Length: 204
Image (cartoon, rainbow, N blue to C red):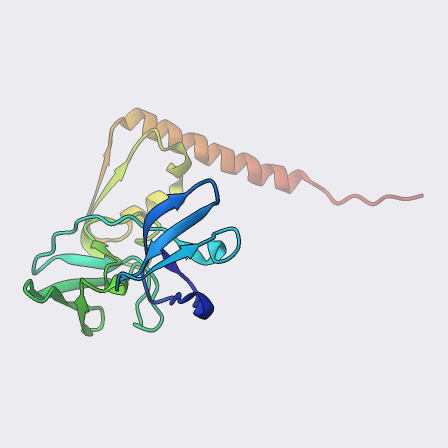
């Protein structure tokens, strides 16, 4: 668990990470443990619930040359969620990695620190996250069942990121095309309906 603000009287820092080691459902209290082993009782109904974020740790194998991205904003460290970088050096003995960020800024991160562990591989991204980025080649995946994502704007964003080549993969081409047509028709009907609405004036 991480908190977005400090709770000085509770011994909570927004820069720290706290592991849930016990859950008391009857009294709605969680026992947290900080990175130094100190334990404290957290009563979510009384304080901190609106400022807390829960995470699950997962193993991440890093190698030199990997493209990575930060997954949490960190104003003090000048990091933005989605910020890209490339691993240029690794020190496995000390748990350090050197990452070259956009603009050739190089940062040394310690995988033992909670604030440095909000990291993931950047092999793929959603169409939304890809806005503003470019690449030589783009390989886009579109599931025909994801009807809420089948609309022309998402397709344009996904396929227009490429400088040289764009390739689209789907599990069912005909269903995907039908979904796009239906979404386009829904948008057209909504626009037509708004055009036919006329302002009304009530008179006595």
